[in-house]
Length: 123
Length: 109
Image (cartoon, rainbow over all chains, first blue to last red; front, side, top):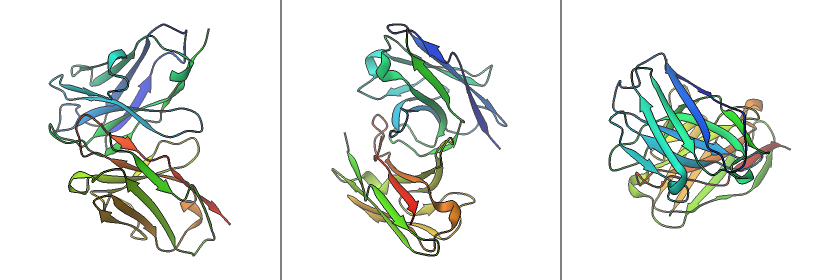
């Protein structure tokens, strides 16, 4: 079955860019009509959707983060990536990648999820 | 943006009891595009229910979802020890704005 795994630096300095990659295994990222999403969760708090990408490169972003977020896909490596610029301590969170069942017009549910990657923003 | 409000914040019950968790939306959720997740400490969320009432693969039938419009419910018919966790609802009616509820913690009484 499809599995997802996040990777990237665990510590980022304030004002810099957070970069994470999600590697999809057990299936092709281009297989089916799935989107691929990023979601984050600050410690002890709830979940926040960041954005999603289709393998064509089409993206949707959370309006509250849109100015700072870029999501890209590399189908040859079966990966998709997240960049979040100008980070502050408020961006400290566990970042999850997940397969998104949505369509062009509608969103979808998330299944499966990666195990999560803790990113701390600190100098 | 659709705001989801879950209640109660914490629910204290004993194994074998019935749990009823609520998720209320600030406006109608398109076509019942609502999902429920279970999250245990140190783990990612696990999909339980999608489309308001469809169980995900491998989810026991003691979990059921219902509702439409602005009011949705997750019911666990008889609590097992492994069911004590945090539960989140999520709406996905728009391709550009997914939102989650703040969560309900189900704890052992």
